[in-house]
Structure formats: C-alpha cells, structure tokens
Length: 69
Image 1 (cartoon, rainbow, N blue to C red):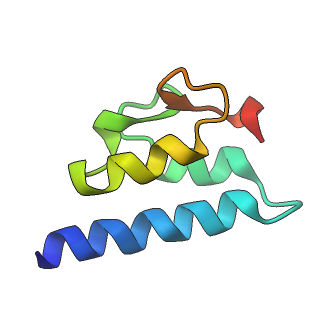
Image 2 (cartoon, one colour):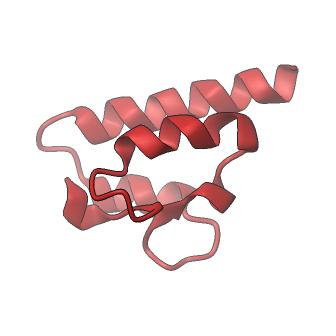
C-alpha cells in the first residue's frame, strides 16, 4: 500500500508538470523514462499508476510522447 501511494503521488506530479504551459515536457519524460526511448509507457510506471497514465496518452497508442504536448 505504501509503495502504491508513492507511485500515485509520483504520477500526479508528472500530470501536473505536463499540464503546465511552457513546461519542458521532454525533461519530465526523460526523468521517468526507464528504458531511455524518449517516451513514457505503461511498463515504466507502477501497475497502480498505469491507468492514470492512460489519461495523459492523447493519441491512445500506449505511450506518452513529447509530441503529444
């Protein structure tokens, strides 16, 4: 439960940062991008937070990409 709450808080921070106008989206993605491909995917966030990631994925391809913001 503690790890899940930590993951949810981390993803909320990501959402807030991506939603802020003028924010450097690439820097945020790079920070949380575990495999270094330049995108955020469901496997890179904890399972409890993966559903929240889906809301950030505007083109519904399973990845949050810098071009979506």
